[in-house]
Length: 252
Image 1 (cartoon, one colour):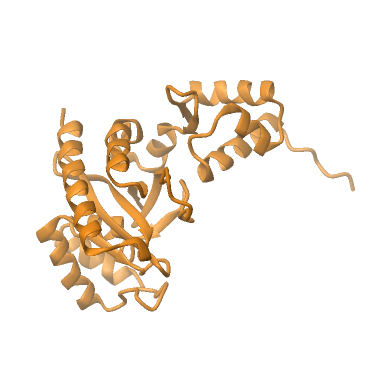
Image 2 (image 1 turned 90 degrees about the vertical axis):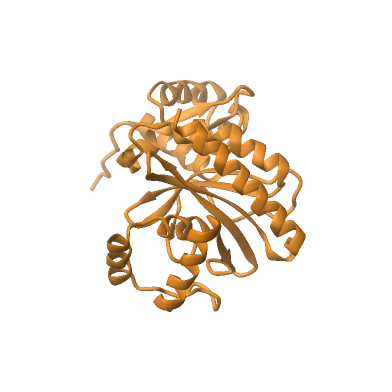
């Protein structure tokens, strides 16, 4: 029996481009064409269409990334706020201060969805994370930052419905211990993932709110061997500064 040819091969090519950008943000036209095995002219035509509908965006250096329309589809609670574009200059500033991997995430179905990733500029080890993946709230820095902001009833419902699965030997799987840690997050505004999602990876995160409502979170991630107490305090200071600036930005 003859195999039915799929309708809309351009859509399949567009999906290929978006899959590539989800793992490799900030890519030039030439890099995208080469890695998706398409001609430059075909790639450009598809990218122009994806730009038009907001599925990808292009910066001043003509590098492409996934667009904010996808975020709005994934998380209607953002209220049309273009979170990626709005936060980008502040996260780029944070990265200049702290040359480590920066993540931006939003809350979707009781998980953190990664919607932006800024790679470290001068580090050889890369984080395995990519735009489009999700992480549990209880075991990630961004997730804990969000959990700490939830109303008590919402948090208790989350704990009832969620099995605290250990991803590493360091994952917190005791609800009382998690509650104790979240209290510290409320007091400091800073959350940690100390090898809880991945062995040898340390993350520091903070939540983002608009009009009292959670709209997302951001974090700094790095191999734990690079973390010293002084560097940790430097990162925390930079995150607090960035959070204050972003809070001002989203409320104006």
